[in-house]
Image (cartoon, rainbow, N blue to C red; front, side):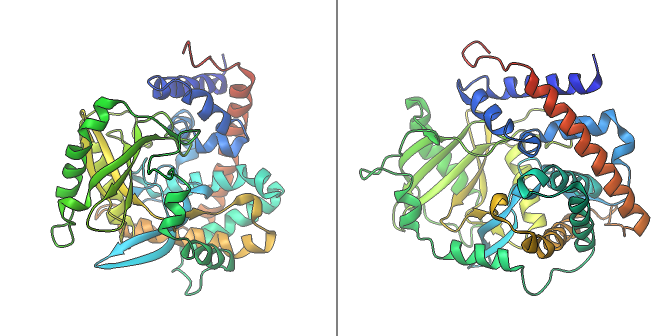
Length: 389
């Protein structure tokens, strides 16, 4: 049995384990991953680091350590609102820290480059073109953020700013105020619904006392199991509609393991997973996403944030070649800034000499080729039936 086949089977075992509690989600996740090698990468963050452990020479590079995203790829940048003091600000930046961990900065860089090379199919790029854009990402990683964002980012922020809370709620709720059940939302058990007031109060009490809303702002009116993303599909996740003294708020509560993808294993624990994610967000971003905090339910750690109408992501299929020339250095700069904010005192971000950048591009090329091979073997094996998994 080849190493690649072992890794393909390892990914299927990870997905089986993660989705075992919720029938139907294994086929949902695998359908999203089966679209392309890039889709496969999006759903297999832990596998990326298993590949690095199997081929350690592909993970070597400049020093520097701190909080890394752990699941960095092109689709994990987007628009969202953050709280900066008492102000709310619409920004474009890193938007997913579920797999964050303290690790070498170069791991994020290598994963980002690998994602560019694998996304060349979605972007209609040759490998040579993709290498050029990978170089642009690396150049941006070492520079300050430009004063003006790329035109495609400005346009995305403009569209996001035009959406209203009514738009957000009407797309998810019925006229009676309950969630629209279907591919994105499913019913929750009565036992879970009964715990919601206590879950929300734990979350509220963990917020900054200076800006903490009163308890009557978190009256649960509707809730549903939420299905979103790719890599985290199978973890417990719910959306809760809260009403009270203020306008309705829609909250996302998502289960988090105690360790992120770069760690060799999850050590278990109760609330440490959500605290890990919140700490990464706080250290790496200019401000926290709206109402970001932690809670727990039946011993499961939950990362909580407010869902806002301004959230949006780049649509890779809509990006044009001229957009990419500006975009990739900008994404690199966003990553470098987050790394500098989250660096440890003993692991400050190290400069990347030209030779180190060339080596990173070569390593990411091999990593992309390995993932394409694993993807082919994973796709060739018939997936298990959800009902018998």
